Length: 185
Image (cartoon, rainbow, N blue to C red):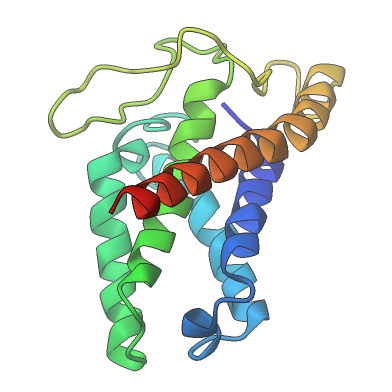
């Protein structure tokens, strides 16, 4: 699984996408958007807290229902409509929220998972199987022997390099596809 630092970096990069968007800035300040981005990008890991509250074990339900695309979409809908009740934000805000939530699931699927079953239950409630990409591009955290260890430090350094590169590749590929669609229409 990716680290909270890696997920927060993904949140920051998600903020980077909307930092100058007048539709978003009309309703929320840059600071509010940044905090929202980082919180939503880390939100699936609320299952650590839930596992401890219900089972006295932080890992009891980790990488299960909160790491589902479907549950993420429902959670983002609830957050969106709560915010929309307060201020009439555009529907693109919902897409942005879900993208941030999705980034968490994607990063966990790209990270090496030392704990079986490996991966996340990203298709709950339709499938309880765990899924991960066949090739891990992120090192993944280890809690055996404590959180402060060389492996975790190297994983965080790796995330600081790879996550922005991955973001910009996806961003520029999506941008070029969008331009091609615009040209052909």
